[in-house]
Image 1 (cartoon, rainbow, N blue to C red):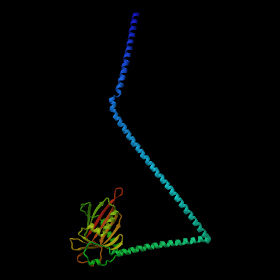
Image 2: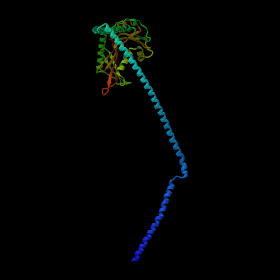
Image 3: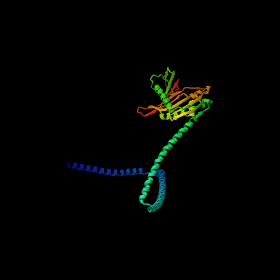
Image 4: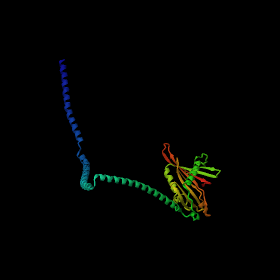
Amino acid sequence: MERAFLEAFADISELDDVSARNKEQSCPRSYEIDSTSLRLAMPTQVDREEMAPNMMHLATFKNATEAKRAKRSAIEKKSRQRRKNVFKCMREEVKQLENVYADMSKRMNSESSSGLSKSLGNSSGGASMDELQQKYEQLSFVALALEETGLFFDGYCKSTTVFQRYSRSVLEDRRAVWDSGVPPSLSFAAKFHRFSASECYAFVRKTYEEIQKFTECEIVESTRSSFMGWTDQHKYYRNTQTLLFAFTKQFPSENVENLFTKTWNLFLDGHQLEKMVFDSSTRTRLEVLQVLNDDLCIVRRDYRPSRLQITLTSVQIMFRLQTRTGYTFCRRTISSPEIENALEPHEHLVDTFHWVHFNRLYDEYDNPAGCEVVHVCCAGKAPL
C-alpha cells in the first residue's frame, strides 16, 4: 500500500512537470503571434509611398480653405473699418450742424427779445396798458366783421360761378355737334323749342311707368334660345301694335357702376358711338339740343347707311336713373314740330324707344357677383 501511494505521487509530479513544460512552450508562441499581428498592422514602405500623395492633397485643400477664410476675414475687417470711419465722419458732421443750429437759435432769440423789449419800451412811453387793451378789442371786432364779409362774398362768388357755367353750357349746347359726313339739310338750322324742367320730368315719369309695366309683366314669350350668352323675351301689344323684345346677359366680372357709366358716356360721344355701333360706311351726326342736368339731355341723331339713299333722323330724350336693383338708361323719341316741319325729302323721321337695365348680382353670401344687363327695344309707336 505504501508502495502504491509512492507510485501515485510520482505520477502526479510527472504530470506537473509536463504541464509546466507545456506552459513554457505556449508563451513564446503567443509572443510570436502578437509580433506577427503588429507587423501586419504596420504599413509597408510601398503603402506609405502610395498614401503620401493623398495626404499631401488633403493638406493642400486645408491650406486653400484656410487661405480663403483668412482673405474673407481680412475683407470683412476692412469693410467694418470703413463703416466705422463713415459713421465717425457722419457723427462729426451732425455735431457741426447741431452747433450751427444752436448758434442760429441763440442769435434769433437774442434779436427777437431785443426787438420785443424795444417795442415794449416805445409803447410804454407812448400809451398805457388800458389803451392797448382797447385797441386790441377794436381790432378783434374788425377782424370778425371782415371774416363774416369774406364768407358772404365767397358764397356770392360760388353762386355767380355756377350761373356763369350754366349760361356757358346753354350757349355751347347748340354748338355741340358731331358730324362724319351726313348730307346737309335745312332742318339742321331749324330752331329747337326748349322744354321746361317740368315737361322733361313729365316725359321721364311717363316713360318709366311704361318700363315698369313691361318689367313687372308676367305674360311674356321667349324662344328659349341663347346666342353668346344672350337670352330673349318679347311681348306684343295688339291695341297699339307695339312689340317689345328684350335681351339679357350676365357679366360676373363686371362692376355695375363702371359698365353703366361707360354706356352713358358712349351714347354722348358721337365718334365712339359711330365706331362701336355702325360700320365704316355709315355716316352719323349727333347734335346736343338741350342739357337739363348731368342725368337728362335732349339730342338729335342722324345716320345715313350706305345701302340707303335716305337719312334717318330722330330727336331723343336721354336720361338715367338709379333703381333699387341698380341703374336704368333710356333714350326715347320725342316730338319736335320745328325740326319735323323742316325735314327735306331725303330725310325720314324714325321712332326710337330703347332702355337698358344694369342690375346688381349677388352670390349666396350676399357678396357682389357682377352685373346683369337687360336691353329692351320697342318696335312700333314709341314717341311721346
